Image (cartoon, rainbow, N blue to C red; front, side, top):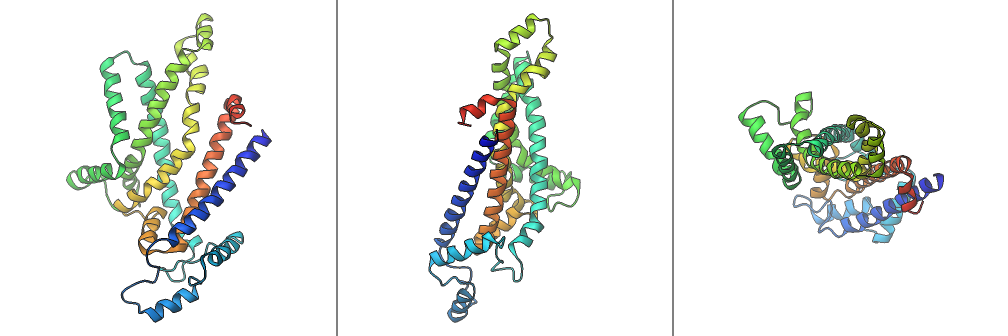
Length: 307
């Protein structure tokens, strides 16, 4: 197990380093620079570029950035004077993390319940209705859903506020917007995994021993049925965090998604790099945790992945 974990950590570190390199070079390919503004003359732009080292060859810039990164220095924002990237993350991450966690838990609980409902119900109309809802949940983009929810429940009915994230009512519409897509994915996975697990030999043996369907489901089937859900949990959490970029802008939530979108618009290189690294670490960590959990639940997964 230790060898398997070490291998996964090494793969995560390599992936993160590759992400840093790709992001660094891609943002340098963006047209213009952070100080290329109409109200700043060329002489001032040149001095600012020199001050921040952006007039150096790109390999020199990369080397300087990696050296600073090795010491835990993510740099400072070019647009927000005196604001470090660490401070930006500390301010925005709690909102994004809290929103993403609530959305994930909501999607996991409701998606599992809906998936089981589709698998065990004997009413074709109920099964068809739930299937249609899951297809719609996968098909509708979250920004479209956000605008619909905002218009109906915020503007027309005045049930929930549509700006900020200060009370529990503010969480309702953003959480629904973020959780619909993963909820639909989880429900389809649970349904197919449950049906497959119910056809296994160990279920037949359990029935032969006189065990009821409820006990078979809770003790034997759900353990295997939830493995695919655990497997996609890492990428799903990353999806919720990155998917919140658009949602945070629509609902005016002061999270890191909103900061990332503003940084891209303003060509704030260090903010883009810092937030990308932060999200990359979260993605790698979530994937590592989900892999370890799956390997503990089903050792065959570790063997299949060459552990």
